[in-house]
Length: 292
Image (cartoon, rainbow, N blue to C red; front, side):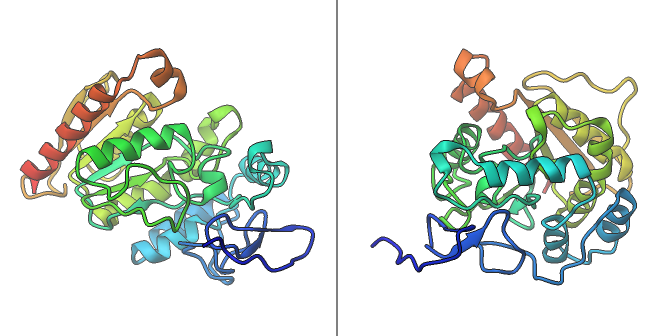
């Protein structure tokens, strides 16, 4: 049965799943499915705030809430909110999340999938990482084929999708113009990923693309793992085992595994195929099991 739509103000539109009315961007704590924040969640306004608030987050619930209201990067805030208000024509009748995207999935996932940043009309619209766009279709289909996701696709937050053994996060939490965050924006956002990895304690970081590969290795190094110099080169199927006395996993090793990114540029041209992605996911799952 279609949701019942109540009349709202001109700047409110019905959520496509629940019918509840929201402004774009969505205000924290107003009922958006899976919104981790409350109206008074502490907000980072600077890079220094990100450092302090990430480090003081005692658990994933607090971390996710703080991520989802971050305003530390003025260019990204302006861009994500402009996209949320102008919209794409196909989604003109929907509200847009228009806020940073927290990590999502199993809070103790042995595999942490690392992407790049939310898509302007994907996660920035739906409120969940890799959800509502073609790249996300590839990610969730692969996780479903591997037995890690209950559905083969993810349309929006609150759509019933769930995963086991895997969590998904992005090094940059806001949709950037041209999918290209600046080095300063990447660095300002990095403490969120560092704290997420420290809390989740994954045994494998599965990096989708060169940006994610570099971010995963940098994160591991900041958290105390020994990253070789020169750094291992990115390539599809590349992997490296990082040792540290403080590493997660019973064998004291963090594995980093690489895949080409699931961008349309790669999937449409055949540079990345479903069997290629499935093989990398299977390898990550095997390594996570072997390290557990």
